Image (cartoon, rainbow over all chains, first blue to last red; front, side, top):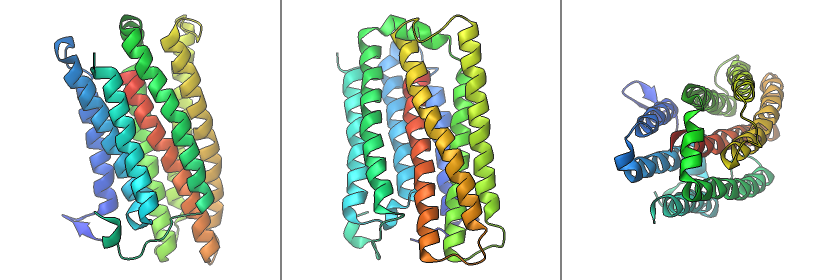
Length: 92
Length: 190
């Protein structure tokens, strides 16, 4: 996968950055959700964080061209830590 | 995307940097879990303490690290592909982002300590100062690494060893970025 491919005038690297900034602002907005929907806000914040971590790994750390063991190890950690945190924070 | 469908599997950077990444991810996993357990067990203390944090410091620092990572990724890619004549500028821009992060963090800590919040105040502030402090140490090391990458990228010709050095340094900087993302989520946004 070449990062010089462009989509609507932006490289994949720039799209990744735009996604990361957009997701950061989305997670920030989740922080303003009222206490009645606390579980929804928590889930949104953690999933947005995990998604950003995966994009950084996949695109910036170039896991898209890494051997499968590295690729899946990082993916497993990202999904695993998100599940553990969500379990602690949302399961009563 | 499956591993088998990728055309040329190649470890980005040196193997050693990935061993470091794995170790750091495990250590920070413990930090993340401790914060989450604290949030669960002492919800009121954590929520009240969190309200005294300035969300804009955290948001600004997140955007600085994300943008720094973007610059580093572009710089590494251009050096590897032999594109552009002044690729050191990407690493200089990323260094600037890192330095502003450090200054921001110092101002934030100063404001908190000035308002009477210290690591001894409660568990939330203990985690806040210790974990963001350990992360800040990563940022400082990362800035030094980026300055080194500036020098490497200015060499007239880059051999495969130089490229691996650039990739490894870049991976370290991205690690600093992604660790902050979860710290920001757990300390500022919950």
